[in-house]
Image (cartoon, rainbow, N blue to C red; front, side):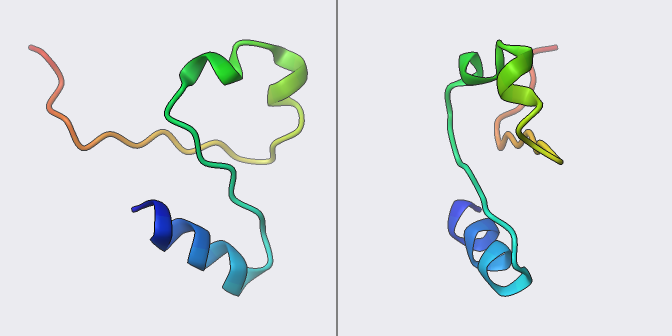
Length: 47
């Protein structure tokens, strides 16, 4: 998934920042730098 998104970004002219650490987005100042944020998980959610 990571490589596919990075490749799509390069082809379409946008940057992709990839992290598996959600604490990176804890600050509103950090969030304001982004036009979009994608959360992806391949794990089942506990029910």
